Length: 58
Image (cartoon, rainbow, N blue to C red; front, side):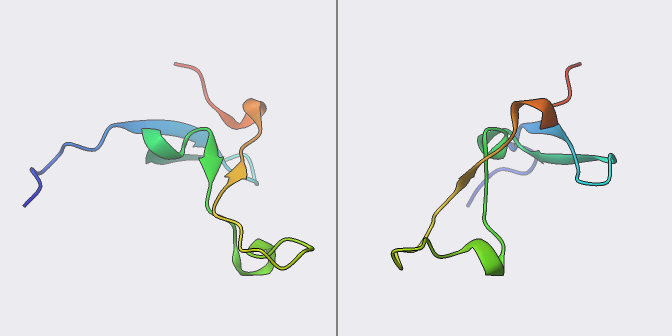
């Protein structure tokens, strides 16, 4: 069993400009939504690169 409170959090600026907290492992990449799950060749996409401007410093 995992320990409570072991997740390190980072801040991301959301699409509408609000700031959300995401795990540090997802700061550089995000999980694709239902419409972006497959590439044009039909392969399943695991993660999408996040914009560098989305990360909030501080």
